[in-house]
Length: 294
Image 1 (cartoon, rainbow, N blue to C red):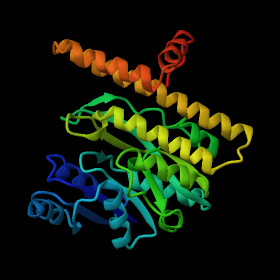
Image 2 (image 1 turned 180 degrees about the horizontal axis):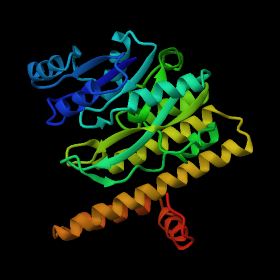
Image 3 (image 1 turned 60 degrees about the horizontal axis):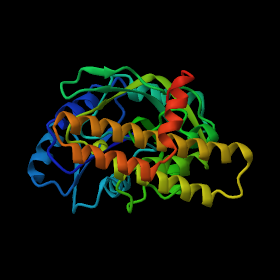
């Protein structure tokens, strides 16, 4: 088992992230930290070496390229990815490995995720991860599968070409869609990842993220043609889900702007959402009226 941690900084959370790997009940693993052009490489090396991790230094190329570089240096037949600001519960790896033992034909196992704040306190309980993992389920994003909560067989990762280094957002969605066309996914419900929400992580760039998701979904739909009815419906569902995300994130940003007395910024968020996803607001309101949540 290889654990790849890509970082472009000496994050204030990376020590906790690596400590959570060291504390795993499944101990047969190596850790590869990829320094993706961090301004203080010595600081990255120091914290990595403190936890027995190998360090690779490379020029900045983005998280996708950094993860690919980490896998290239790894020796395990299974690979897990950990962001430098997240952390794992103690049975995360053990649960994932057990899932592969129970389903030896699977190429990916995935576990639950909960959101924590900067202090590590839970702000959103373990989310929508469940055992819906057919290809159509994955395309429609009916369950939350991301780079941070998967373990992937290395040969499958390499067979699909790894991460697309040209992508700066949603690179994990692109990988997962390619993997879903290659083999079986399996749910590991006893594993848990803490995703840390804070002011410095990339999820704040919602416009870029929504646009990237839209492009990736449309490209995969085109590349998968001809589609059966089930898969076509799944792509449509996933695109509508992204439109609702665009509105949700724009409204949240607009509310923040209003509180900060920046009405022009608030208006620009609403205008962007109207142009990007004109039907997304009404779709979201209709689902809420029917008691349906994403």
